[in-house]
Length: 162
Image 1 (cartoon, rainbow, N blue to C red):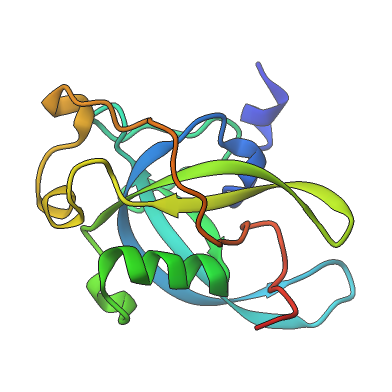
Image 2 (image 1 turned 60 degrees about the horizontal axis):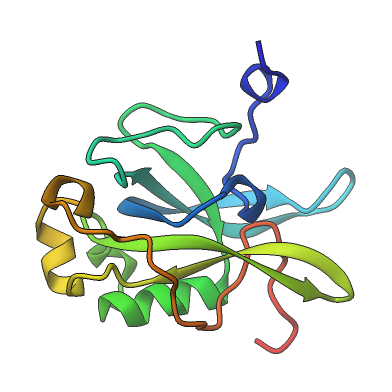
């Protein structure tokens, strides 16, 4: 048995994504998280989603999966704004059922190399993606390279500029 299966990460981080994934958003939830041992709990937001790249919900290896909720990632300001722009929906209550593509991108943040989570619209129109089957079901490829748009990683704390 793999150790990552025995002790899965609680939240999806950039390092967990080896490729782009079409996701369907289930919920955005406010919670309290600690940045580390002895650190005070701070307000954070979790984006709950299903990976629907294959046409059926799929598990991301090494990350905890909750039936009917899927996977969670810590939603930071920049990624939230990016998804907001992609969906043309400022209210996260309007996000459930909508689809976006998340993908990994390497970057150096505060002098440390990290893998960020970025988001982009599916190849098909955002409106169609929100209500129609995934590209795997329709036979289209949704894993083409994406344009670089500012975002943030689930594992990176809020950037100092916001």
